[in-house]
Image (cartoon, rainbow, N blue to C red; front, side):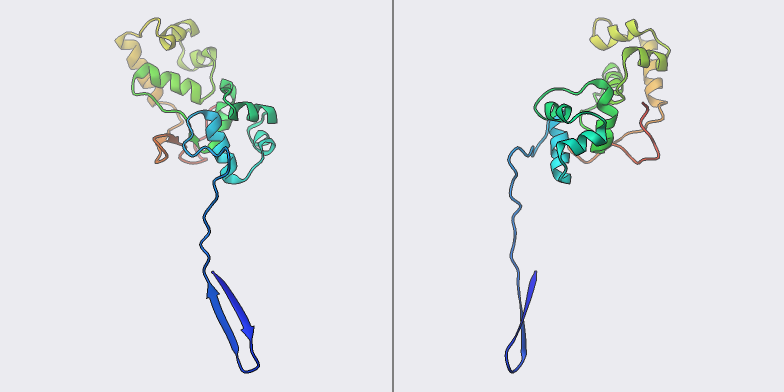
Length: 175
C-alpha cells in the first residue's frame, strides 16, 4: 500500500494506491523438488543465496553445489550438513525395517563400518541386509528395530510433502 501526499494552496490531500504484485517465477526454480540437488536449489533460491554461500554453509566447494543442483548425487558424508541446511530430510523413510536402517545410514552419512560400530554388527552382514542379498532373521530384525528406536536423534514427520523435519537444535544429528 502506497500513500501519496500532495498540497494545494487551500489544503493537504492524500490518497492511497494498492498495487498487487505477482511474484515472477525465476527460471530454474524447482517448484516440486525431487532430487537432493533440487531441494538445495529451491532452499538456496528461497533464501536468496549464491552457490558459493551455500557451499560455505555446507562445507564443500561451489562446484559441488553446482554439480548437485545439476543431477549429481552428494556423497554420503555431506548428508548431515545438507539436512541441517535444508531443515528437513529430503528423502522419504521407508516403512520396512531394513529400509529404515538404510535411510538412517544415509541420513547420518554413515559408512558401513561406522554403522556396524554403532550397531555392534559386522559391516559385511549389514551390506548383505542393505543390498537385499540376505534378509535378517526375526531376532535380528527386532534388534534393528530396537536400535532405531533407541537412537538419540528423534525425527518427526513434517508437513512438507511427507519429508522428515528436524524438531530443533537441541537434538543434534550424529556425525
